[in-house]
Image (cartoon, rainbow, N blue to C red; front, side, top):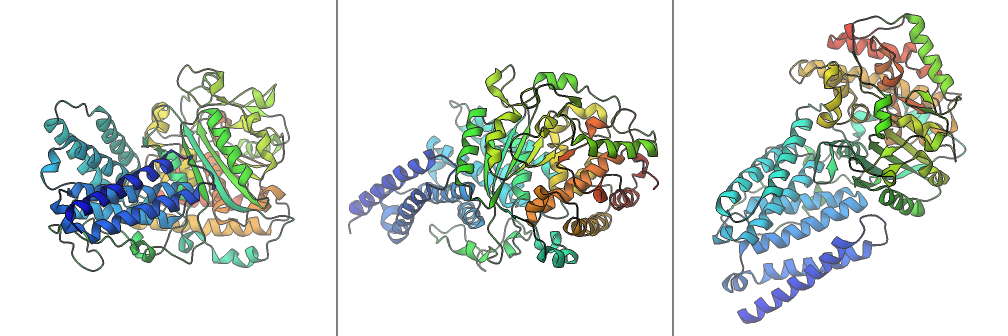
Amino acid sequence: MAEEDVSRNFRALVENADRKFARVRDLPAFGRAQSHYFHKVFKAYMKLWNYQQSHRPKLVASGLNRWEIGEIASRIGQLYFSQYMRTSEARFLLESYVFYEAILKRRYFEEGEERKDLSARSKELRFYARFLLVALIVDRREMVLHLAEKLRALVDDSKSNFRETNFKEWRIVVQEITRFTKADVDLTYVRPLRYCAMLDSYPASHTYLARFHAKKLFKFRDALLASYHRNEVKYAEVTLDTYRMMQCLEWEPSGSFYQKRPVETKENGFVVDHTLTSGIIDMKLAADMADPSLPPNPRKAVLYRPTVSHLLAVLAMICDELSPECVMLIYLSASGGPAARENVAQPENAVGSSRTSKSKLLGRASQEQKSYKSEPLSNGHKSSGGYYDDYLWLGPRGGSGSNNLYPGDLIPFTRKPLFLVIDSDTSRAFKAERGEPVALLLSPLKPSLENPSADDTAAALNGSQFTFFLTAPLQAFCQMLGLSNSDPEPEVYDEAESILSASFSEWETILLTSKVLNLVWAQVLPDQFLRRLILRFIFCRSVLTCLSRTEDDDPYLPQCHPSLPDSLSPVSKTVQSTVERLADHLGVAKSFHFSKT
């Protein structure tokens, strides 16, 4: 076949694949109905990829640039990633990473005269930006730092070589990833955020879990994660809070892919020769990286700064497709309206050295238990109108009432089993009992910090404290008390994790054997992800209850509804002893006051 025919056929395949790709890109990111489109566009790109491999010499002779080959591979990686975001299937995420890593190693965008081409440079910038997001979610921290540095250098080079073009948006991208990595990488994770069967499964409770029965047990299959804060840390459309929740609701494979390795490695056992003009990307490599023994991840819809109407539309779509035996998790992280922030005054001293009396501690726990039967609370005060007195603010500064998400907006969706996590300074507005019973974890109205003066900016710089407790409890504990990475030695962190793990195992057994466990909790307890959130909530609530303060504790305490057993109340001996042991072990016992029972 002549070079002209090969080139003509190649361009036709490119146009066909690009048309199909545009259709997939413009489809709604939620809902199962679009899956057949993915197969069509994937097939088109596989045909294109195989064609360019088979006819590479003739295509190169007819003027094919290396960056064009990289662009095809980049599109395939982008296609895989978009399908991961729709389905949460780990294999799609791994396939995406494989393609992006191969592009980086083969330097498709980094060689030849095309580096002086503005169009090629724009594609190279988009490649690094997309690979960064994939590497973040795969949790390849070394690669993230490497890519961030490469992107920063590339943007600087672009400003020098393409002076007629404004690269302001790309400078913002560099600032975003720098801020994100600073907020997240500065916190040492001694264990993965994902659910690790080796670390998060407790053999002591397996017998009780196997015998655990209720009238109706729900399966956790779908989650909606949404965040809307001013100045929140984010990269692309993933905020630090939703990133942590995404990780928390996935399985951690035990394969070699998730072992920490240097960026420069061998590929398939052989050193990659970057001088080669061609090479096969092994698209089946990810199959060896996944862990087939693990169940599928819950499907997650991640919304960045959604409007109220968009959030409710996505929620309705998910609920419409939700099976009767399944429960959906809804995670909402947003500020309350301006009135809410005025009612919740800034603390004078969040963590002080004063001692709280035993009677006050016991009274506080009793008050929390009784409050579940009282009228709905809003900012610590009784609400006159319940579901429409307070709201989450999903809109820009100075927005209209159409940006307000009221608790009453969720009432229609309570016809399906829900597990709600509300992280807001108006979280208690969602506690009113209307509609069908749902499981509720509600954040404190104000964070507890060692340095109260940083209260205004803590959420923006480090993410939500409550979300951090639910996703990385030990790191949240240390951050709250001002412990940096260099404070406890690695062995001290390991022992602290052991204390926490042993306690979680004991609490899990208590929950599974409780005679008074509310049916709402009983129906979701068998799920590993939801059970882990409940255990971490119990820990968070006890830590914040036992902190010494010079003012009213109530705004600083999280709440749940319905109530959990008294044996796991924040001041019970079983729970409080864990906080006491952990505080003693880390040398921060002076910041707490423990009741003597």
